[in-house]
Amino acid sequence: MKIALIGYGKMGKAIEEIALKRGHEIVLKIDVDNTSEFTPEKLRKADAAIVFTGPQSAYDNVRKCIEAGTPLVCGSTGWLDKWGNIKSLCEKMQGSLVYSSNYSIGVNIFFEVNKKLAALMAQHDDYEITMEEIHHTQKKDAPSGTAVTLAEQVLENIGRKKSWVNHISDNPDELEIISERIDPAPGTHKVKYSSAIDDIEIIHTAHNRTGFATGAVLAAEFIKAKTGIYSMKDVLGL
Ligand SMILES: NC(=O)c1ccc[n+]([C@@H]2O[C@H](COP(=O)([O-])OP(=O)(O)OC[C@H]3O[C@@H](n4cnc5c(N)ncnc54)[C@H](O)[C@@H]3O)[C@@H](O)[C@H]2O)c1
Image 1 (cartoon, rainbow, N blue to C red):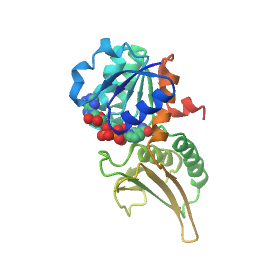
Image 2: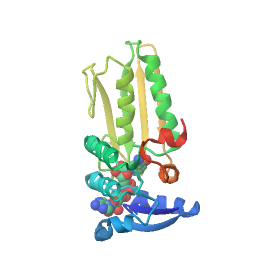
Image 3: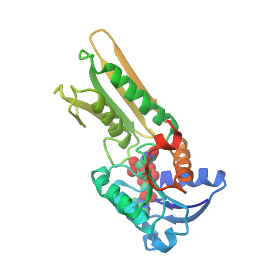
Image 4: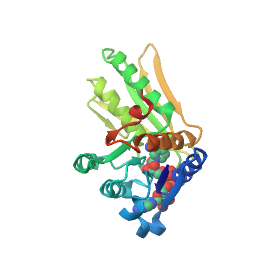
């Protein structure tokens, strides 16, 4: 298939490598130095666009792809305050979008384990819950999009936690997420349940970017002929 890459940084380059290996063609590459080429005409030459730009430009880039009618996979994180606008636009334009805060197969299995563990722990008030995420120092958003997804899953299942915060907290209503920035960590996430008797921890550690890139290409293959909004759970049939 023909793929447009919007954002040609660390992820854009990793995705290109995997896409070429899977027999796809890259028909458009957009980064800050050639944004004038990011036109509906050029986008429409692609079967799907894959957006991995920074958080500041992600919303506009996603919007442009939907308006051009090009199915898209968005990996950019840190822009979900505008999710409602994109959802409405996608419905109005009958657009095609896959969004996941994390495209790796391992993390998507981890998400399912996190939900199941949270449901099991819902009644066990003697366990305090905390989260930690570690990424490389160039990461612009904190907490990571993946940590936000994990936190939302905990909040949906554990009534005693009302909101997440991105700092140390003594407030029992708050779910504490500690963000650390250490090179070259591609991404580590930990959810910990701690009581006076014992601890239960689940940890996912990415060793490189290949998992995210492979998942993003799988998502592009999935969305090419579909309409609507999907997640990696749909792509992987979890
Ligand atoms: N969902 C996932 O699985 C996943 C995995 C890794 C990273 N990410 C997220 O993806 C994003 C990109 O990550 P990265 O590691 O490739 O970062 P990066 O900084 O290496 O690359 C981002 C690229 O986008 C370019 N860019 C910025 N504004 C642009 C614009 N207006 N138009 C076109 N290009 C523009 C930058 O010049 C840069 O080359 C981040 O938000 C990161 O958190 C998501």
